[in-house]
View 1: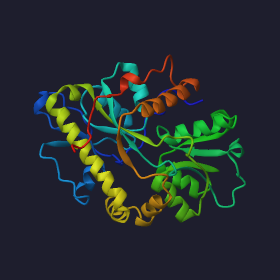
View 2: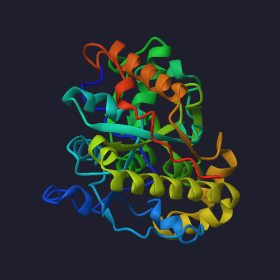
View 3: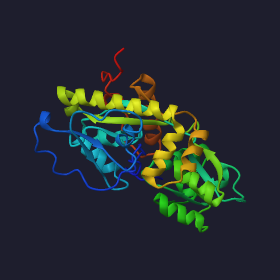
View 4: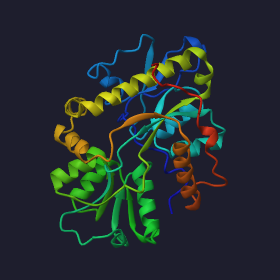
Length: 324
């Protein structure tokens, strides 16, 4: 069984790493810059190439260690971060602290890039064949949640396999060296394993994951007129950036490769195989219901305790639509 609080992290645009966020609480609300989650492939690093003008107000980039979602959730819940990005899972745990965290928009993203890989020539042909096998996954990511759903659907649980919680780089090494029979991974990491190791896709996350990545703020920022206006403006810039990515996939792949050091070929493959391009959309009842289903699954698996209300986590009145 998955332990409580192990599913906090969901991948966003950024591969965040670096300094922390402490020491930001001593400023008056309107004097503060907009504090935005930041990493080596963050939204703002695409603004110039996408033709998106930089904001005319101060923006403070906030970095977290590699698996920094617990810190991101805590920063949002305590008002030290104004804009973050995560999967549907982390806010379900933040609510236990009567959080001020609020979901303001949804990035609808690809689900085909979340996969279960097996080595070339593996005898594993179906998800049921995972029983008793050594399976790697990244704790605190959507791959953890994806694996939990696949196991349950096929009458299995974590006690029925040999689970191995690994970071993606360690997972790649274990998979490459024969230490894993299957690896649950996503995006460019999966594409690298397919290209370099000739790994085979056993299953992708279609029908398992929504592909919803959440833009998350906090109530103090939404209640402050200046910061709310800046949040609206910055969210619009993110939307324009994603529109550019959809129209210019080759330029996006080239720029992404330059930012991350990952092969441009992998980014282009991701575009070719994607279930849909990423688009930024307003909060809807469908997106709220999607998170509610996640909450119910986690509650049924014993990961969430008690009731699982999600409605109050969402800000339905945050309007970032562009003026006509």
